[in-house]
Amino acid sequence: MHHTLFSNIIRFPDKETKDDFDQWVAASTLVQIRCVSVLTGLLYLVYAYIDTLYAPEDHLYERVTIHLALALLLFAIAALTLNKRLYKFLSYILMIAPVFAALGNIFITSGMPNPSLYLTELYLILYWVFTVSGLRLRQATISAVTIFIIVLISTIFFLTLSPEAFTLHLFWMLCSLSFGFLIAFLLEKSNRKIYLGYKEMEQLAVTDKLTGLFNRAKLDPLMKERFEHYHKELDPFGVAIIDIDNFKSINDRYGHITGDAILIKIGQVITEHLPHNAHLIRWGGEEFMIIAPNSDHNSLALLTERLRQIIQQYDDFGIDTPVTVSIGFTICNKEDNTDRILKRADDALYTAKKSGKNRTHSPEETSAR
Ligand code: GH3
Ligand code: MG
Ligand code: MG
Image (cartoon, rainbow, N blue to C red):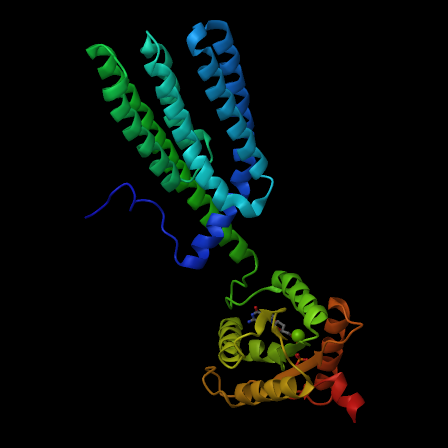
C-alpha cells in the first residue's frame, strides 16, 4: 500500500469540482490574507520602532529600511486582496514575501554580535507561511522549503553560531517546518471535507428521493437562469407539465410499491428521450416538469407528443395495462414571469385532461388556429 501523507488527502472526483473548490477557498481566504497582511505589516512597523530603540548606530539605517520595506510589501499585498481577479498573482507574491523577510533577517543577523537573538523571526516566518498566511498547502510548502534551504545555507556561510546555538537553530527550524506543515495539511484536508459535504447537501436539497430527479426546489434557480438567458439572447424556452393519467386507480389496483416503481421508470424514460440541454423536475406526486431551452411551439409540440407516445407504448412497467400521461406545455413570452408561465402550462394540462387525457395541449396551439 502506498499511503503517503499527500495521497491520504481527500481527492476530488473531477477537475470541475477541483476548480470550484479552488474558487471557494480563494473567496474565503481573500479576507484572511487581507487581515493577516495588515497585521503583519503593523508588526513590522513595531519591529522598525524597536530597531530605533536598540539597533547599533551603524546598523540602524539598514534595519529600519528592511523592516519598513517589509511592512510596505505587506500593505501592498493587503491592497491587492481588494481585487478578486488578482488572486493568482497575489498568491505568488504571498509565497515570495516571506522569502524576502527571511533574507532580510539573515542580512541583519549576520552583522550582529549576538545572532541568536534575532533568529526567532525565522521560526515565526516558517510557521506564518503554513498556518497564518492563507497560502494553500502546496504553495506554502514550496515557499517554506525554499526558506528552509536558504536559511540553512546562509546559516552555514554567514552566521557565526556556537555549535550548541547552531544545533538548536536547526532544531527549531525543523520544529516550525514540521508543525507548520502538519497544521496546513490538516487544514487543507478539513477544507476539502467541508466543501464536499456542503456540495453533497446542496445536491440533496434539490434532489427527489424517489426518482433521483430534481425536486421543486430546483425550479427557481432554473427559471431564473432561463429568463435571464431569454431576456439577454431572445432565445425562448418552453415549459411542459406531465401528469400521469388515473394514477390513483393504478395505485389502488396494483399497490403503492408498484406505483412508486412506475414513477421511477417514467422519470427514466423521459430522461432518456430528453434533449441534452433540457431539465426534468419531479414537480409533484405524479407530475413532472420539463424546462426546455431553445424551443419554439413546434419543437416542444414534437417533443411532448413523442414522449406521450413512448410512455403509452412502454411495456415494462410491470402491470398489464398501458400507462398514459397528459401534457400541458407553453413557450415563454415577453410579459412572462415564473408564475405566469407555470399557470399557462398548468391550464393547458387541465385542458388536456378535460378533453379526454392521454394527449398534449398548449394555449399557443389554440390561439394559432
Ligand atoms: P388524473 O388522470 O386526473 O391525473 O387522475 P389521477 O388519479 O392521476 O390524479 P390525482 O391527482 O387524483 O391522483 C394522483 C395520485 O398520485 C394520488 C396519489 O396517491 C398518487 N401519488 C402521489 N405521489 C405518489 C408517490 O410518490 N407514489 C405513489 N405510488 N403514488 C403517488
Ligand atoms: Mg396530478
Ligand atoms: Mg394524474
